[in-house]
Image 1 (cartoon, helix red, strand yellow):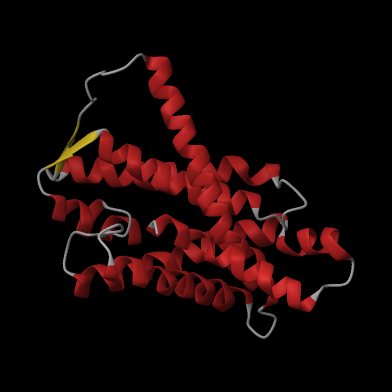
Image 2 (cartoon, one colour):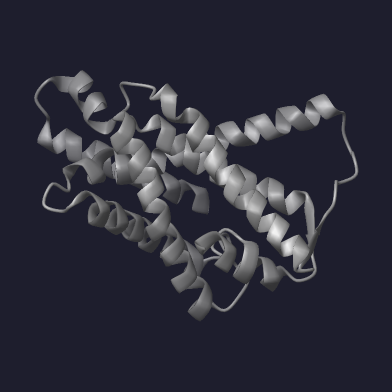
Length: 218
């Protein structure tokens, strides 16, 4: 089975849970409880801009430090086709991100009433990171480079801190859509950053300017 299928396990867990609990109000109430019933449009610009800004700063700092250089890849296809490929990739990222976030910020976060808001967001972010570990440690699909003794703690710290941003979007709008959008934007911008730069070392990207590098954490 493809490792990508694991991305759907949070959504599957929510579906099974709601199937057993049968919340009052039926399907509409279930959608509302997960934040799927409203678009949260006011947060969409923030959801896209923040990941783009963070990775842009990371790329600039790595370039200034001589760890990478910005490079426009040679065109191998018409611009329209390239744009279509990026858009298709983003839609796929949105689907995977929504499947994850429905579980973490859609279902879990609003139900952590025993915690203060900030600790709840941090805890959900940490658990979200822990959920990735089997994929990281048992396959080459995700973060295959670097020493796991360093990469794993950095990754967990990144996801824990990112939980504050994602949690803010969820609680601010009452919607899960801006959260999924921010998650998808993060993955897409990370991928595009790699395509528009040439690193001197893959480890430099992993430890310094990658998705969970020191620059991202900072």
